[in-house]
Length: 326
Ligand code: ADP
Ligand code: DP6
Ligand code: CO
Image 1: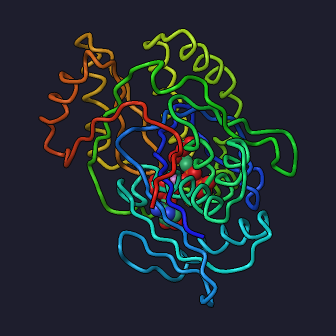
Image 2: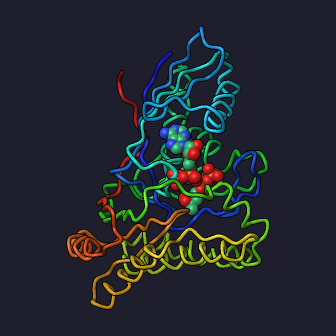
């Protein structure tokens, strides 16, 4: 009744930003990501008969309130799917900053989906696991797979066709993703709340949606052909558009800090010097810089010179879900 799974975070090249169904976590659009080797969550789930409720321990601290609720709601879904009754102890550790825009919700719920089904001996396909993880946090459905991944939004209302597939494995294209930490604190507007407010109130949201098809086509082509400049150009533009929608929300909000902009400008300057580097930013102030392995040292050295940079993590495409023996 116990199992341990590890899932890596993923960084979106084409962003998931907005739900058409909040209950089922059905997105407004397809999204494309890279799974990262250095950031991951390890989660053990133990179903026990002597519990009166689920217990959630994150990085050694037992959490209650909204955090425990999210876990219990997710485990309710697992219980419904597997027809198992009984509560569980969930022990998780994040090898990634929590709720700071480094996608801890993606690795967190992918690991929880895998460990909880495995603990119950429930046979599930990767697509099934992706559908399950999606209902904990949308971006988690992409972390089932390694390398380059696309989440297909699906057309059905029941969510059975909304899951991720792998475009290229982590061995197929070596890229460098430098996670630039300018602020480790947890974000004020969680992704869930931020995208909801944007969908409901931002007049720029329709423009965002209308602009996505060419971005998706160009990204798929760049990945299939390993054309880095094309990939970088599109991913940077896509991130800028996503963040522009938040400025139009009511009340408006912004994930960037002045340090975020300093890093963005440094990346633009690197390009002026002939180095192919591009940035993307998720729901938080931290920046991810993408370049080719041959340039990673130069890019790291330039970013290190910025006073606002607190830490740099060099990542490469990483693996999908895997189980650890306990
Ligand atoms: P992030 O950028 O880190 O993904 P989000 O706002 O999307 O930030 O999600 C943060 C939330 O993800 C946390 O409040 C918590 O509910 C959930 N989360 C983070 N780590 C884990 C974990 N290891 N297991 C389960 N849920 C987690
Ligand atoms: C900006 O998956 O964290 O990182 O589904 O509400 O849990 P919920 O949100 P989450 O949103 C991620 C938003 C993003 C873009 C992306 O990862 O595609
Ligand atoms: Co998240």
